[in-house]
Image (tube, rainbow, N blue to C red; front, top):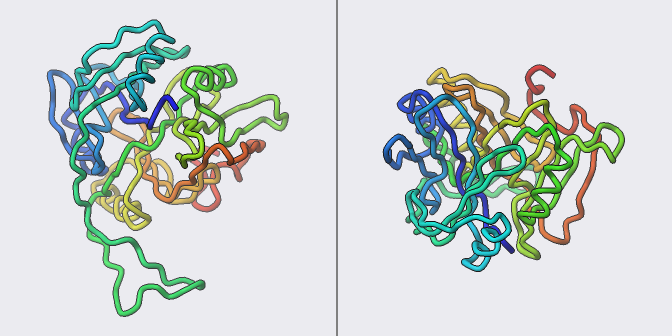
Length: 304
């Protein structure tokens, strides 16, 4: 196993004040600014989950938490890269490279973990047709931004999706959980890739690769505390009159409850909860593209 998880997403924004306020309202916590870079964290133990620097609006890349010092050395040798002291909050050792589409990839080992931030709320006890589990108690989530626990995944565009799927598999040990094709299974349009962690359960996808005319980012996705946390976050963002993109609904690939918003520079970010988990015994699946591969329920995808 080379990689523990995706850890952070890297952007540039022309207005750091505006994006800071947006992401705090979205559910991240301000870590502070170092030079021209703004860092925000989630409620989990990652030193930060989001970094953006002053500049022309751009999606720059992503950072991964490496499983061991040996894995860091192995990956650095593979990319002929030098290991250095990590300049980000948390420190540790890191190196950086780029993928064939030019996205910056950073790999960090040994960064100091943070204390998790209490986010309130006991696990939801559901009263449904199967059982009545909430007896004499009421469901009363607090009106507040979502409590983001971690960065969950990125969905990126590539003009050569099949080659990019193979590259991430060969170099980072990612494997497809599910593939989307154009009706011919040999013509892959998109892949939902998970980290190869053997028998250990891991997210259905850490990286989604989607065919498109040019490289780019579809969205960065952040895991919320629970279903109510997604819904309450939606209400807060709506009350603050931010631009809504799509949701609330349940995805088909990965099964997440989803809700998408658009930041001041036009980048899309997702709240999600209740995603699928896979391991080495979970067989990969393949489907033709269509409305049914976008969602199980919810509003239609914009423009479709």
